[in-house]
Each structure stands twice: as structure tokens, then as C-alpha cells.
Length: 623
Ligand SMILES: Cc1ncc(C[n+]2csc(CCOP(=O)(O)OP(=O)(O)O)c2C)c(N)n1
Ligand SMILES: [Mg+2]
Image (tube, rainbow, N blue to C red; front, side, top):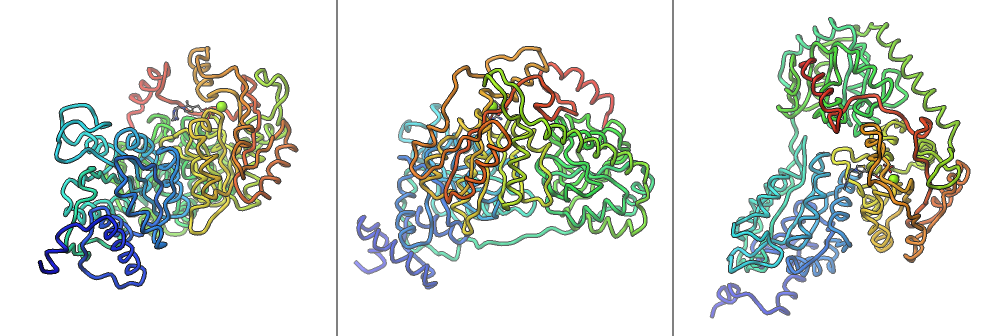
């Protein structure tokens, strides 16, 4: 037999391990040959390395052991880092948070079936928030010899692929030599210039170990950076609309988060006020006099006032989620819309629209040029709005001055959520710590309270509002190539969805603090039930859980009682800040009808028994 024929045959396990180690070494030295004999799984890991994927969050199962074995050898060579965790949901949240907060890419690896489905469910977060994450799912065998355990139990082909492709973009490695195309599709999705998202690579269990003799590594795609230009559109018309309008509101979503300087210039030139969606907090500094803060279903006094009274809407990088435009009733007096977005569907969402489809920052620059220097003289509007913002500041201050209330569940006075959140986010600011917010009242109160000066202080996962996101996000702190300190502000409901972080955070060197605001219930939902039907139902517990004991059970974790006063909470935060690893602070918080216990609701929402009225209003407005 000649040498080539030998290569065509897959070597023994020992020989394969040796070869993989040699490949990894050659990769490190930068002298990997152009052609290699390898398995599909190794080619995949090499392909992802070329895409700068060095971090893997994994829950291996029988559906992914082959990929796991390649990763073991490549980790030994120092090329990748693999973090074995306890829940695919947590893994997905951690990968999402890492990309979001640091820009670093990661892959999530699961088994077939339940593991893949848990990660798929969690990937609603990156799909909604526009974050690029790779998912490698074990999948049923491509030879269809009979049912595989954990596959969807129907006599049909490719059902996991269908499920995944519904959520994002997906590709099945049914045919091993399609790998380069699969990776290119993934790269285009995960590194999309304006709307990245999750990409699912399905790995049939029988193709993972398929032998690829003489595979040409040149076929594996490189990272390719793509940028969009400014919209080609009728800027003169847009400028004329701005000049004619009397009350201009600029509404900024996630797509405008990083357009701070261009937005500030627009506010000045258009005499406009800015309102942002929860995800875009800090897009211009909170203290900017024309920033009316958050607006929408929950909203704020100044934000919703500006939306409610504006006659021209300049929508910037927003997909108009109910939470941000009151289920399409947010702008009852708007006559015209200038919509700046890279996505045609989003840019044409409202009627009476001039759509500017292109890169948000560049398009804003062009619009600003067109407006010139001297437009912004709409003083009456700015003054009215400024008064509302001042009223909002005193409303907030009132809550800070009344930080404790008598609570039934706790049988005594405890901190309110607004007070605890303000104390904690102020502390985070002085330390330069990033804040992640979990779902529920914690999240809503949070985006009403935070006063960010730049966009990367707060990460509030309002796209999917996935309970357990914030605490799982802490895993990213120790994994990042530049580790950072973060706080996860979470409720008792959200924390208990993903308590795995206590173990995985300790194991993988998370640096941060979980602030558990415990009201013994899923307060946001009891609140909705009370507002809609006058009755809470099945959204609380009567048992008092000793969460500090959970934390104490894990070596290396610091468990602190946050107490029931501002002072005790501040002291706990100080102590947490001294701890090198992960801290859990438990703080009992108030739930009840006292308005000082919350931040109020300023908008409309198409849910529950409000739907009739909200929908009627939407159709009357006709925007
Ligand atoms: C995984 C998941 N399940 C259900 C929901 C719906 N939901 C939104 S907030 C919430 C309650 C949150 O409770 P908690 O974390 O204790 O915060 P609180 O409202 O009490 O401050 C629920 C059930 C969700 N957002 N995510
Ligand atoms: Mg709660």
C-alpha cells in the first residue's frame, strides 16, 4: 500500500490522538499544512478557530462526545478553553453575555434532544437582542437506521433542523464535505454587520467522526468584516419634515446604542428630545438635558410624555417591540416618521414614513449634515419636556428618601426594590462594575432607575426578558480574555431558574456579585394580575428559603445578608467588592400596594384584559 492509501483509512484511536496533538501544535506554530487527514469534528474545530472561536460552553452528552474529544486535545495544546457547565440554558446565556459585554465570540455545545432544546430555548435571548452566538447541537444519525433516543419521535427527517431554522439560521452537517459552506453561513450570521444572531450547526452523531482524507484547509472561511454605508434616501425631505415639526421625538433602540455623538448632534440640530428603549440605556448620557430616558409600556414620566405628545418621530435602530412603543399606541399625535434602520421591515414598520435604510451612525451623520447647524429652536417643547424630567427626578428622590416599607411576607420593614437598585447601581458606578439585570420587577424598576452615562454600564436583556439571564451572565466575567467585575441584579424567581451559577461560577472563576432581591414571589406577574383582575394567583411562595445556605454550600463563595436598611446593603456591597470571586447578597424586599415600593407604569400594553382598549386605540391612531 502506498502512503496515500494508508491515509485514506482512519487510524487507530491512539494514532488519531497523536495526529490531533501534532495538528494543534502545528497550528500554534503557524505551519499547519494545506491538506490534512482528519475527522469532521476536528475540521470543525479548526474551522471555528479560524473564526476566532476559542471559548466553548458545554454540556456534553452521547450526542457530542466526538467533538468533545477533539476539544480535549486542542485545549491541552492551549488553543481553546472549554467550560463544562450544568445547564445548556446557562451556557447559552453566558455565551450571549460574553459577546454582548466584551465582543468575544463563543460556541455552545450540547448533546442531542433535551440538551439542544434547552439551548435552543435560551437562544431566544441572542435572537431577540441581536447577539452572535454559535451553537453546536448533537443530532440524529443521517442513515436513519431507526429512532435515536432523544430525537423528535416522529417518522420524519430533519426535525431539529426545522426547529432551529425557525429561531435563527441553521445547517446540518449531514454531508461532511459541506463543512466550509456551513461555517460560512454561520460566520455571516454570527458576525452580521447590523443584526447578528444565533447560528445552529447540527451534528449528526454518525458524521462527527467521519474521516476526511486530504481535506483542503484553504476551504475553511476566514473572518470577513463587512460594513454598510449610509442610506441613499431623500435627506432633503427628511430635513424639511424636521424643520416643519414642532415636537420632535427621537426614539432609539438597540441599533442606536453606539451612536451617541451622532444622536447628540441630531438632538441639537433638530430641537428634539430623545427617548430610548430599555436596551439602549446610556446611548446618550442620562444627564443630557434632552434625554427623556426610557419610554414604552412601563416607560417613565418624561419618556412617555415625549412620545405621547410628539408630532414627528425619528425612529433610530428600533424594531418597535411592545415594551418600547406601547403595542403601537405610543405615538398618538405623530404625523410623520423618519425611520433609520438597516432592516427594511423595521424601517417601514409605521405609516407616513420616510425610510432611511442603511448603517445607523452613517445615516445619522448624513441627516445631521443636511439639517445644518441652526434648526433647533423648539424651545417650548424642550421646556415642557425638561419640566417632566425634573418631576421624574423628584419622583425618584421620594423613593430614595423612603427606602424601607413594612412588608407582610417578611413581617417587618424591608428595603424597597427602587431603593435597593439605586444603592447598588450607584455602587457599581463608583467601582466601574457592569450591571446585568434579570427579568421581572427587578428589570423594570432597574431600567426606570439607572442613570447611565454610556451604553456599556447596563446590560438588561429585555429582548427575551429571559429569567436567569443575568445570573448566568456572570460566568462571562471570569472567562473573558480581560476578566471584569459584574453585578447581577436578580429576583428570587429569576435566580432559582438558573442557580447553577453558584457552582459553575465558583468552578470557572466568575468575579462578581449576585444581588438577590427576594420578595418571595414572581412580583411582576402578581402585579399584572392585581392591575388586570384585582387578584394575584399562583405567583408566590409561602416558604421562606435560606438562599444564603445555598451559597454557603459552595466552597469559595461569599454569602452575605444584605439586611433591611440602606446602610446594611451598602456594607454588604463593600464587603462583596473585597472578595475576589463570587458573592451572593440576599436582600429581602417589599412587595405590595404602596406606590413608594415601585416606579409606576406610564404606558399601554396589549396583554391580558387590556387588549380590547389597546387594540382599539391602535386602530384609531392608524400609525
Ligand atoms: C424563563 C421565563 N419564564 C417566565 C417568564 C415570565 N415572567 C416575567 S417576569 C416573571 C417573574 C419574575 O420574578 P422575580 O425574578 O422574582 O422578580 P420580581 O418580579 O419578583 O422582582 C415571570 C414569571 C420569563 N420572563 N422568563
Ligand atoms: Mg421576586
